[in-house]
Image 1 (tube, helix red, strand yellow):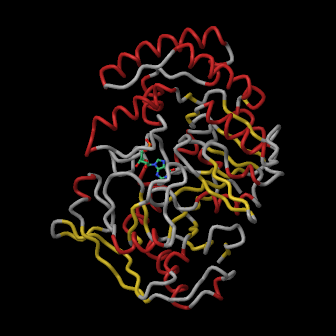
Image 2 (cartoon, rainbow, N blue to C red):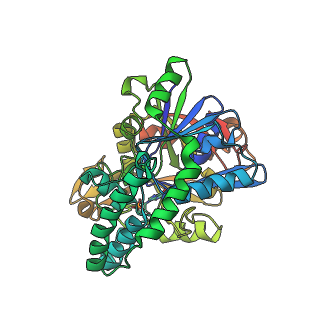
Image 3 (tube, rainbow, N blue to C red):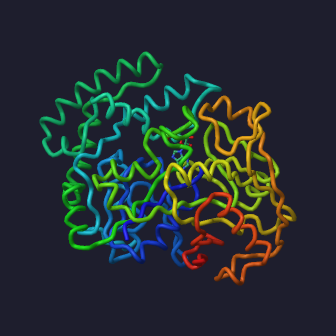
Length: 421
Ligand code: IMP
């Protein structure tokens, strides 16, 4: 079965962990959008891995992984990630394939990202400063450089020179530091040499695998409300994080997709700026005091709130979510009472779906339904039936309010702290 896995909230839903579980029944794991702004955490036994560009499937030795055309790649960061995994005994040769048409993130993208954020001051997006927006901006403006360019050093150097000249002028106007052509050229050509064995035409390779009956699992990065089209624009990332992005980002046709799995936390979190209607200082303080909800990529404390079914209902609709995985249920173990937002009240109207204008979202007041807490640890539970009854009712309600089948529940970071429903 070919499956797309997406985040149904604002990212950080625990996708890496669910991918790791679903990988068991798949042959190939594909990343098709985003870049090293992502941080997918997987805990295997006593070991913890945080993956930024490489699909989480790499942790299962028999599986193959693809970084497809829709991903933006910082080759220096990717080499570091590859070497880090190899040092920990994970073999990548013959298992990792990287698209030659994926666009590059260059140092000037990172600098422009940072300089733009600094200029915005209070209105900043709160990006990860990994250069993601400017890299996708260059792709859309048709001024991007791709991995395929690195295969021809002379052509690459000429293109890079022109791009650095233009971007240094932009950086100067933004008050940022210029880039050195020689330094970037050296670092990128060196990284290209290390990446060469992995680079290929992944579109053709993926189609051959499909013809051979292999199954694909698409590892979505970020979440529905960070999608450039469907998120809380402009407080979004610069790619299509929703299910459709998996097809354009890999060259796999939509009719090959047989299932969409949505991952959502049992509450809501967001890192960076922008509206978060159910945000609650109480739940943020509680989760941070437990040492939870700090970003895997930037270490920033995430903003936290009650579960927002208006958001996940919309996520189900735009992604075509068939099945749900609910993560971090154990984060709510100590609460006496839990709230779930079932609709918004906005200027006298009851809304079941979020308004498109992020400004308007600031005027939305959540309408809550209260659920009794279970006040028992769920971290050792390994089946739905063994969950406290109140927890069973809670997760069942989240799935019903979202409108898809509940399939997986996760009660901790480790691989084994997951069960099917
Ligand atoms: P960018 O993708 O670095 O441009 O950041 C844009 C917005 O998306 C910011 O609010 C980031 O915090 C958020 N973001 C980007 N990647 C992730 C992620 O993997 N998890 C959660 N939030 C993310």
